[in-house]
Image (tube, rainbow, N blue to C red; front, side):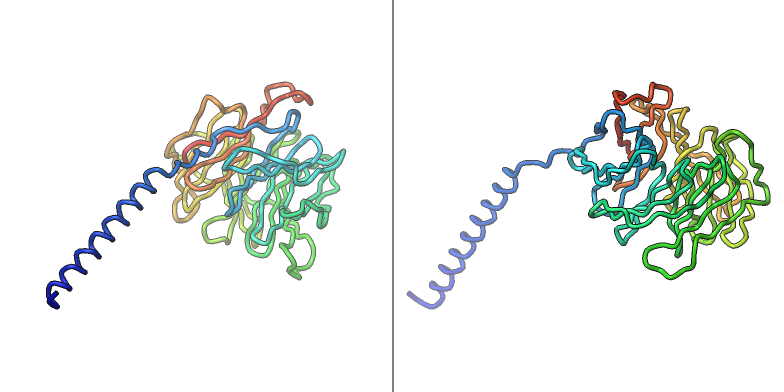
Length: 315
């Protein structure tokens, strides 16, 4: 066999081998089973009385209970959940946020407290007394800078709790001034987010349904001008993605989506999100291209036998 003939034969064998391997790979890929879609609705324990939800970088949602302060961890891939933190009689978890270091910050409602819980083990790390006023209702929380900031729905003040192991001294009280007008005997400050630059906060006043930009330095609140709707009545949880603000309006069973201007003085209504599965949703969290919400069902009996669900809608 000449050198040229040998080279041609080897080239042909190599090409045939590669073609066979490619065909096998293609067949294997075609035969591989498709992944089951993640559920868009999942059950919560009967009588759980949910209100808050937070999601980190991993596909797990953490939900708080108004019944006893427990925290439920749900796998978004399967919809199955387990109690991570058992809570205790006389406590509540309203809003909550997950920090990157694995700490959950829990708003304690009428107890006037903020609790820090290990998101891996569910153990209680520490409890901060934020308010001894009567009444008080520590409602929601956002993480920004070196502190976690909590709203008090019954008093015109925000509370800043040091984050993680930082040595920042004590809990900081930030009275709300400027345009803020506290209305007695109803829930006022509720959901809270940071502005894109992290220098200020945006707080929703559930009644009469207004949005405020609050200076982290002074506590001065400036009411945002709304375009496209008169108010965000029943505004509850807030979620900000870039310059887009999502406002969960619980008893209206909708999420209003707003564009913030550069000065954070105006919000323009872009659209609303509704779904027949909404049953007084209170707060929202994002994972991927979905918005996850919990149904608090405030218009239904709040009994140990009452059923509750979490739902997901396209972002």
